[in-house]
Image 1 (cartoon, rainbow, N blue to C red):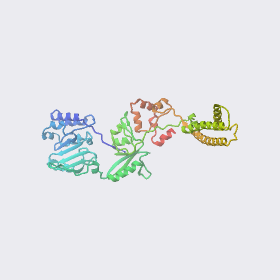
Image 2: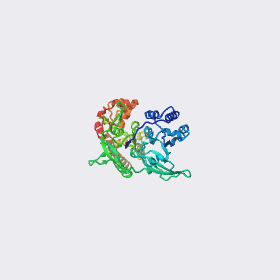
Image 3: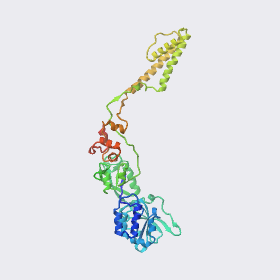
Image 4: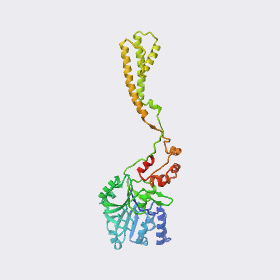
Length: 457
């Protein structure tokens, strides 16, 4: 599942430090400072924030920063007025740091501190902001469920004698488990295997089941506002999003129930849940019409140990028959007798008869035993050989993506408007560019798994 987040301009620590120093040195006035804060290029991390008249806003991750060395007295903080907090905090994501806000003047800010109106700090559900109102010894946490409302919870007493006394659970989400009936606008991808609408309009699939449980546990609901055909991809030429990602980016939806792949471009405009399941990527292709029978199939009927046992029986039987014939009075030379018996036993293995028989019962029993053994082996070999010969072995013209590109006889397709298409279309990898040359036209790409299999059938 994926939900939208608000992407805001953020100032780096060095940039914010330089701007604040220019302000306190008189180089910049308030209007110029606000203008530079709002128009500055996007950078990844913010460490400081402007301080209003009766509010001191500190980033607790940088309490020892140069900002506090620059202004050694509290009077310097009164130069930036309270109304400037809203544009200042709108320029970056307030959830990227932990904040401590102290309302300095009880007379002016006590009522607003305890009952804040709106959401001037642009807080989110996962924002970490501690607030102290004037001389009160209670620390409160502020966060927001609705963009126009700030939630307030008592967190811990804070006094000079005892310091901060913990009175709430450790985990942030153990405290914030109630969304107060919030209604989320949802968008789903048609024919998704993870979530889809049933005939009676109910959400089904694994994502649907999970989200219904979350609704019951967190006290919120959702309203499906649209169905789209694509997951959504970034078009660098037009600088636009498509599919479900476009709905999230434009603010027409808050969440999407489907199986999304995480990409860098998507992370810039949306937040993702923890992975529900992980899958592998597969390349499916039409089965070639050319197939062949491997000559090795004639020897694969038996294992190596069985073949060795059969050869051992052939040698031992030749020796045994030679000894029995010598005992019965055969006067031929031993080497001739061994070779004749070897060929005779080999003939039995090849379903041939014997040219002469003996009156001795010992030889008759030996011959009978060999015939029985060969009959069983022949039946087993014939059955196994038929099985191997009737099994078709497909010969592929390639065994990797590199040889797939070299072959050039196949066309390539992925889901339209998916992360897979982005991985090839926006990649600088030489192999990805070669695969794009084999890719079907974008409007001919399949939208669903069924369409994909039908295209290679």
